[in-house]
Image (cartoon, rainbow, N blue to C red; front, side, top):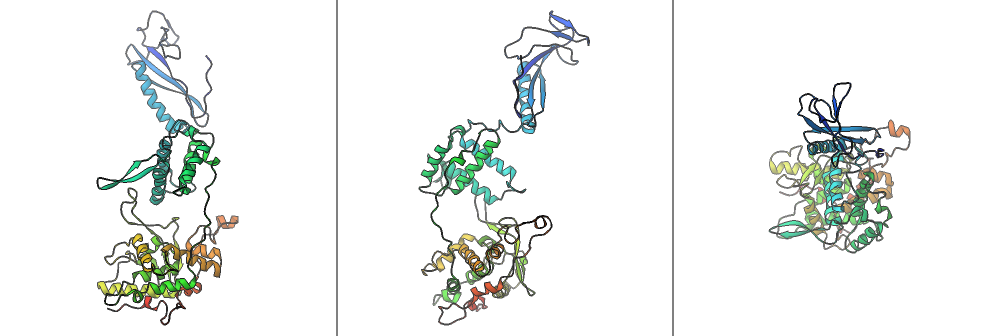
Length: 483
């Protein structure tokens, strides 16, 4: 019988051989040159090849050998064999050996099949991303990225919803997902209809990205011929304008968050924390989590060019990936950067250090975050956003301002006054000013370890607000509070 050609990473059907010790073979036996005995009893059902017999010391009268042809992912054909006391025992042992072979020599073509459901593929893809990490560079995937991917899978693709039961929030399956759709049934038309319905009440940008990666994995593993997401029309976006404050509005904000401005007669003066964080945000354009993760040891305030190292960020709780608020020892993008600080921000940091030292009787520990709470613990980014939103709620031109609005505000001013590359370097975007364009840039020139000096432009934020009747802008922010 002609052998069936095997594809790389596949294996054929197993066959079995029954071996007999010398002197124990049936009557229809012949003696070979090596002294072994080869018997030819009737072929049992399921035995693909002829039954052979021979002598193997230390065995009983007979045993079975199970064999199967395999072909590795690189095209090499070989034979895998295992033996057992009976045919079924040999089959089980060979099956376990095949599983091991698939993991080490197969190409994964049979690890994903077209009859899998989307739910099964999603679980497989999440496990794959946890194990492989980043796609384009070496490194582990951040817990925040994993949490976002899993949220897109659970609440978007599979249709899970949070339900409050027995005093806690749990996920329950709803009917608006495609969990039970099989891969071969996931056509471009079906996905387009589902995504169009989903867009009526939620964004599908991340869902589309995750689905495309899931189907790409299925294509690479041989379960699908093409990615059906390539046939889905892109989502339609509403016209979007970058929301940033003007220079005058930023100066107005500095006045609004001033503790003297927010003070209610007859009550204690508000904490200067908000005004100092706003000043730091306008002087650095750092992200909210990065600002609250800056430690005293990250500051270098002495010398002609005072700087701060942005080398970490806060991760807000996202169970089970992030159970509590923690400081991650690297920022977004995993590349630390150093920023030159304007003089008003430097003076604010010095006064804050003096105030904390005077209140506690001892200087803050170098590893403590600069904008920690009164108890010295990490400050919740969500609390900062709420405090800022409350402070500007009654100002129509500033209503809706968030810490990220300040980041866009600094980027807009730097792009208009200098150029977009300098703005990107200040924000920590990849490729800004350091995008390799030649062999020399790519292989011989080290990247910048400090953003350009933009103090002349950033100082504009700390000038007096033109709408003030009196005062000096951020003077109240930088003033040592009265005891």
